[in-house]
Length: 252
Length: 214
Image (cartoon, rainbow over all chains, first blue to last red; front, top):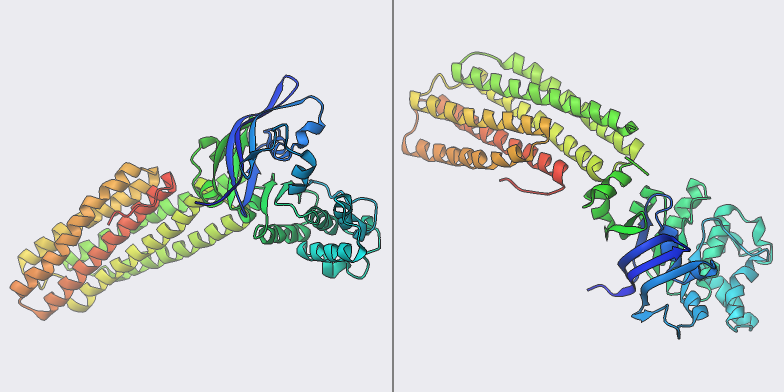
């Protein structure tokens, strides 16, 4: 039996009257990459934002159901949201480094969480830039602005920044959609490596990307979970006709 | 709106159906030649070469489909199955060529006693039916027809081993007949095997189910 890192039970999110996702019950296995696919507006981003309570930032959002992280409901009143977002980090579609130095970007989180010793910060920065496979490209210019890096480097810097606070789960919302194929290949390879240490959930519009990087794939349609299973099964022999039509490009 | 991949898949499907028709004609001609003692080797050779060449073209087409369209789900299963079936059709034709060669080298079955010719004719009918069923099952993606082939395959297998037993009991008058008939039943049995492989591929492409009909 594979260990479950996150389990959603009947998860629903509404924005005012509009239901973005409804009744999603799904198990996300630890140290695996899970891809969430589906047509635009099907609720993919809302779903993963529901896994670290990012939907709460939007005023009208109302969440129902449960999200269990290691068995604890993250929506219970006593669950610390700051701690939750440390444990469940997020990478966005467009690389969003802070307008600071490369070093300060990675050190930002640890500083907020109370690490100020320069030597410790230096170690954290090096370790996580290495994990994000960026160290060799930037080790001689850590004090240069992060804004001068290429798009692919910026995205890996954002991954290093997310890793620096020692998360357990990494959510990625179309992390390669703004990148060229070479930068995309580097991020995809990185995702596979990261899954040895972290649980990764990736939203992607790119079906081939899902089939390349993910161990498990979930297909969402009109806010509901249509199919979830091993990526091999979803892409070779999907059970649902809607999944078949979507992944073969008959609609979407 | 039709997908770009559909046009290329259709081309491949048409190619496979043409192969199916030709493969049936090739096997049928070689068996007829062997039973009647008529020389069909050069004709079967041409047909077989054409099928091998078509199989290579089908393989190239499947690679093109994979490289250009990154197929998944039923598209992927179809491509994988078509590639295997094209190979099976080419194999049918190679065994047909081997059968027609027996006629050239050893004089076919005309050297044999009547019971042997009758036995092999009966076995040939079953095998030709299997070839036809496999081609028809492919054309219509008919899984029921594909599954129905298993029973005949079992019968062909039994006929093959029963024939060997019979030869031990009652040796034919000439060595030529012994060699010819043993080789023919062996090749027929192999063609029957490939017919079941084709049917297994049809079931897989239509349902995703990996079955063994043997």
